[in-house]
Image 1 (spheres, chains in turn orange, cyan):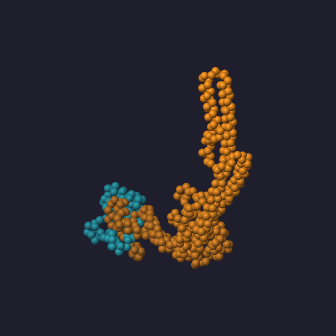
Image 2 (cartoon, rainbow over the protein chains, first blue to last red; image 1 turned 135 degrees about the vertical axis):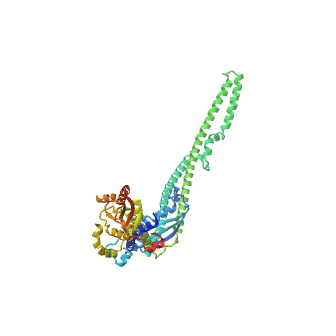
Image 3 (tube, rainbow over the protein chains, first blue to last red; image 1 turned 30 degrees about the vertical axis):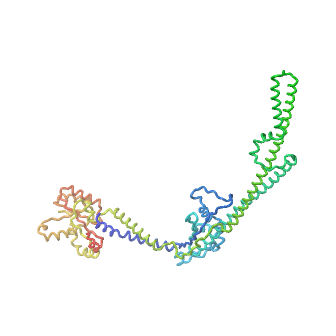
Length: 419
Length: 107
């Protein structure tokens, strides 16, 4: 297809691009007239994540991309709680906002008969407020509305409410934990009192145990029996018994088995063994009591330690509460809500240009389609291609004036020529 | 020589008159006998006239003659014993403005 034929097709079908261009321009103009202008206001917040002094308040993250402190804060901002509070803060958001389109300026719409429903306003506010995460500590809260002041006040209300809600959430959490710790503390106090009473009663029942300092039971317990054999008369009796047994063995080699001396010696050995057994029994009972006593004291000490750690935790919670209030829940407004009198939508020039370009392209496409679907021969090139023979002559079409004048003059000759 | 068309309802009178007028000026052309035989595909007389003639020219009206009919007529004329000289495109219209044509140097 040469350039001449292309030009012929383009000019032959020029009505299509022109018509679609006009239609697209008209449609774009209509859209621009009816479009509601959109103004945007944004504020930058620095949301720090605190290192909690209390173990209970530390949050365990899964490590997923969505489970980060900043993501959670973005969700808090977009929560109904914050939006609802923002509506309470900015009463004018609840009032009916008149349309600011060009059409409404030309012909103002009738005033609304009913006040907008709160739920509707809440949904509209939630739709218009957007949160973008810049980095793990900075986010931008923006609002898109048909009035720049309205957008600014909406962002301000949302930020104020978010700060308060965030602080409230943190304090609520601390309060919940404090209540739990308080309950635990009371239970432990009661437990300690019971344990103390039991220990006192035990000590009164067994005054011989005395008030020895607490030892580590894990060390004393396995070797207690051995230690008890090393005290008092036990070693002496054992030694004397061993000596008597040695003597009996020596005598049994020289004396007859039923001799008086041997019988006497064996009787002494039996008495000594009985005495040793009595001593050992008494020592075992005393040891058992000692173990039980120390176990009770150890339990009491452990409960006191647990109670002390509980008290420390309560103190750390108090510290967290204080630091949270002092830091205003760790949120800093880096940039206050902006006021931009230039609307971001609709973009008149861009919309018109885009519509015209699209209309032109669409029209060119339609023109080409019309040419392809045209069943008639229009140009020399097409005729040559169709017949495969040379085109001897191309007789141009006469203008409208020439056609009519020529027809009048040629009328008498027509019959002759065709016949 | 016969001037023929693929379809009916094509007025060849004006063209024939113009041909005759231009040929009369030429001594050899004046001896030529020109006839019209419209509707090669639709009529019964046109094929006979074409067969009887020495040469034939296919007349195509721009914007009215169907491409399919022109192709069919051209193939019949090529198949016939008569000499198929070529075609003439009438009522042709060049939609490109003259200044653009002269600027780009296209026909």
